[in-house]
Every structure is written in C-alpha cells, then in structure tokens.
Length: 76
Image (cartoon, rainbow, N blue to C red):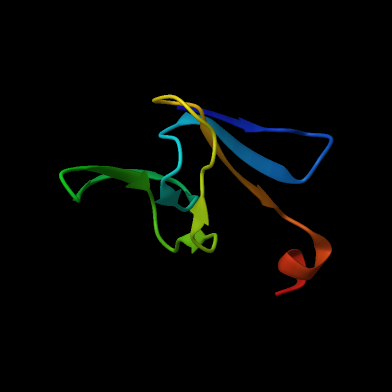
C-alpha cells in the first residue's frame, strides 16, 4: 500500500489497496507498535478516522481510499 500526503493539497490518498472492499483511513499523533486484528497497529492514540468507504477499482490491488482535510473538518 502506498500512502501519499500532498503538501499543496489537503488530501490523503492510499492506493494499491484491495479492490471493492470497505475500509477506512486512520491517523494519530505518532508511531507505535501494538497487536491489532492479527497484525500491528502502528498509529499512536488519539486516533482520527474517516467514515467507512468502498475502495472501488478492479484487480487484486486496484482500489484506492481518499480523504480531504477540508476547512469544515479542520474546524471540528
């Protein structure tokens, strides 16, 4: 999975995720390494998260998830 944060825009994009699956993006204040769902949670609390979204796309890793940090979100 490739995650990119663009400095000229306020959009978080994750590409190369499983296609047509529901998922969400999370972020936090730092890094950690905690057991989580058979894997590792690498984001330190407190966590922010997007609403659940479908990745769309086609093929095994053709999906993408995005989130815009707009002014309404930043004010909340």
